[in-house]
Image (cartoon, rainbow over all chains, first blue to last red; front, side, top):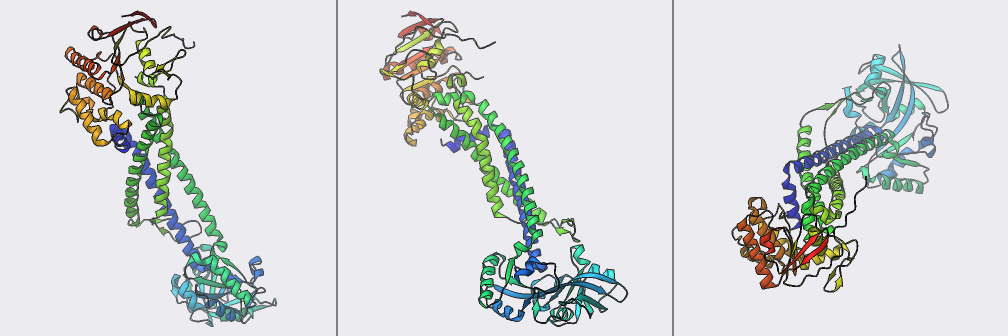
Length: 408
Length: 211
C-alpha cells in the first residue's frame, strides 16, 4: 500500500466533499488561465497595435528632440537623413526604415480651417509595415515620397466637409518662424480607431512636408522596424553605436519606452489580474483548509490507531499532504481541460467586446493559449492546496494518541 | 470552573514477563485503560518510571516511542479500530509496511496470519463487510503479524458474541503459549479472566489484588 494509493482511497472515502473541493480548484484553475490568456492576448494585440500604428520598434532622433517633443518646427531634426538610412539598413536586424517629419498647423478647404497633427512620411515602407494603408475607409494611400497629396483622418475630413479628390491647403510655421502654405489633393481617408486622433490626422509625403516646412533632407525622427520586437533593446544599442561612429549625434528609444499607453494598460492589467489571482488563491485556500480539517477531524480515531501501531507523526502529515497533492493534481488536470474547452468555445463564439474609452471599434473576444499561465496556475493551485492541508495535517499528527483514540 | 485533576494510577508497580497472560480487571474508572496506555507507550506518566528490558522509556521522544511500538508491541482495541479504506489483508499488512518489509514477504505473512485466525477467503473484504467477530480477528491478526513481544488488548471481547469470544481467546492463548507473546488484557469478561496466568485487580488506581 503506497502513500498515493492510500491517499486516493481516502479521497474517495468522502466523494462528495472531495468533488466539491476539487471543483473549487478546477474552477479556480480555469478562471486563472482564461483570464491570463485573455490578458496576454489583449497585451499582444495592444503591443502590435502600438508598433504598427506608427510607433515602430525603434525611433531615432536628435537627443534634444526627445526632450522637446512638442516642437513641430524641425529645429532639432536629423540632417543627412538619407546617409543615416543607409547606415541603418546595413544592420541585419533592420527590416524597414521610416523617416518621418512631424508638424502641426491648420488645414483649410477655403471656407473652414481646422488644426491638424501632421506626419510627412515615405509611403512605400509605411504601407508595408504600418496599418495606415490598410486602414483607409475611402480613396488610396499616398503614391510616393514626393506625392502632392494627403490622407486625412475620417473625423477631420468630416469636419472640413472634404472628400477624396478635393483640394485642401496646409498651413504651418517653418523653421525660421514664417507661415507657409501648400496645396494638396485628398488621396484617401483613414479610419483611425482613436477618435481624438481621427479628428486631427494628416499624413502626407516627405517631399510635401519638406516643402511646407522649407527643410530639405531633414527629418524629425527615423522609425525603424525590426525582424522581431524582442530584438529592440540590443538593436537600439547597436544602431546608436554605429551612427555615433559615423559622427551622427543621435538618441533612440524602444517602442516600450515610447508606448506610455501600453505601459499603463499593462500595469493596470497586471494589477487586476494579480488581485483576481489573490482572490482565487484565498478561495481555494479556505475551501481546501475546511475540507482537510473536516477530514482530519473525522479520522481522529483512525489517526490515533495508526500512531499507536507505530506510525510517526511525520508520516501522518505526509499522508494528508499526499491527499492534498493528489487532489490538486487531478483538479488542475481537469481545470486545464475545462479551460481549453471554454477557450475554444469563446474563441469561436464571435463575441465582440465593446470598444474601450477613446476607441471607435470593438474587439473580437479571443483568449490566447498561454502556457506560462497553465504552469503558473498549476504551481499556484498545488502550493495553495498543499499549504491548506499543512495545518490540519500538523494538528492531526500532534494530537495525543490516547485523546485521539478516545475521540467520538 | 477549571478541569478537575484525577489521579488515575497511584503507587503501582507492575512487571510483565515474556509469554505471560496478564489480566487487568476492576470496575470502570479503576485505571485499567490508563495502565495499558502507559505500558504500551501511548501515554506518559506524570511521575514514576517505565522500564523496558531495564531501560527507561518514559522520557523517550515521540519517534523513538513510535518505533518501539512498531517493533515490539501490538494493540487490540475494544472497537477494533481497523482502517476502513483498507481490506482485511491490507490492515494486517500495515505494521509490516511500517517496518518496510519486502512486499511479497509481507503479503505471504499477512495471509498466513489471517488463515490462522480463520479468515481465509475474507482477505479482500473491507472492515464494513465483516462481522464484529471477524473484525476483531483481523485486529488480532494485525496485532501479532509482526511477532511483537507484548500485545496490549483493551476489552477485546466487549463487542463479540460467545462463539467469536471463544475463537479470539483461543488464538490469544495459542500465541501466548507457542510464541511466548505476552498479553496484557484489560477486561470485565470472566471468560477472559479465566485464561489469565496472573490477574491484577485495580480499584481507584491501586492494585488491590495480584493473583
